[in-house]
Length: 417
Ligand code: EPZ
Image (cartoon, rainbow, N blue to C red; front, side):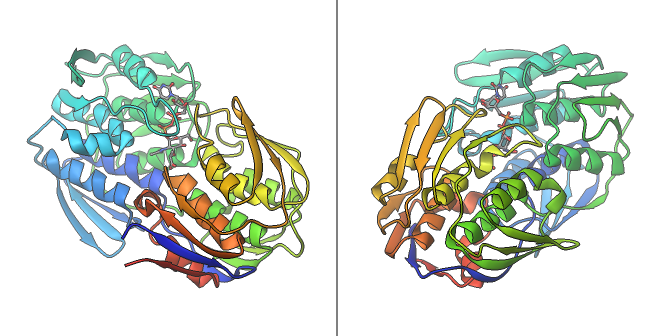
């Protein structure tokens, strides 16, 4: 069954270890296409989006070997440049394969990834950037076909610091002829990790962590072993779970340096946080205090991927809040479900207005996207009574086992069989 059953039973307590980052491993898996030989990736999360990416890599000829949290990808012999429609449609971030396929095979064909429940998800910045570097695209029905002689470096200014478009630009530049300069690019930790992976394979990328990346094209890249860092959004999910339930937890292997904005908001809500070398001791002694306003921003601002979990937390906080979503056009889907649990939330345009309640009541709920689904599970843990969250497959796209993790923190929760 695709349903999670949860029973609200008070403050979370215990320790949880954070999995490898979904949004770091996906572009790095795409990058292995650029490398003839066997790359080894460690600390890879067991999530359905990784399975989908592995199926995409196998569809073009990569050979995959998985041993627990390690993945070996052999991209020596690529044989196909057309990506299977059903895989691309199921995971929009398949678009990240465009540049590496073009760079290695000089052509690539995929259906338009299309929009999803959180927004339109256009790819105009990706295409603008890759055209500037030499690619030519044609549309055939709902298929996009790219062709290339060679990527030639140039300076490209991104109209918006799109994470995926930045990643495609990097993947195009590393083997391009000459120098590529990406201006106004994304600075998310996942972009940093992609650059670090590529540089360890012989790429020459400067300006890592800034909004201007300079890439000197090289002749070839070499197989490497790389360890994926912990997932900052999964860690942030459990951070706010402690805040919402007035719990006391340890978050082990937390990527603290990449979580500053989330930690700052949790502290404003009355959370006491001790930062260890790579663990967070989190204690919410009293009912959280609402923050007046939180605006989602590109990194290092408050991450849009924690916005849903923040809505749940503010729903049970003391006072009124406004959350402004500036990244996606439709990321308040859980408001309706939270309202059915007694939350006092109204939305107007890209703002949600929350008046915190002392508690929520249990309900049968439906997840509609990955992060919204996780936020509904948290709402069920906060609520009095038994809740059911359907469409739990959305959550499995990015969380290895959210029931396992929350049980480690003392929750009464199970995936129904
Ligand atoms: C990445 O998506 C993440 N996914 C998202 O995480 C995350 O929410 C997002 O970055 C923002 O941080 C992965 O890394 C796999 P964008 P991406 O391109 O690259 C608009 C999750 O839950 N845009 O930075 O698709 C776009 O519509 C997921 O883990 C264009 O207009 O995000 C959006 O409004 C959800 N044209 C904004 O930019 C383009 O060509 C940010 O998108 C590209 C994007």
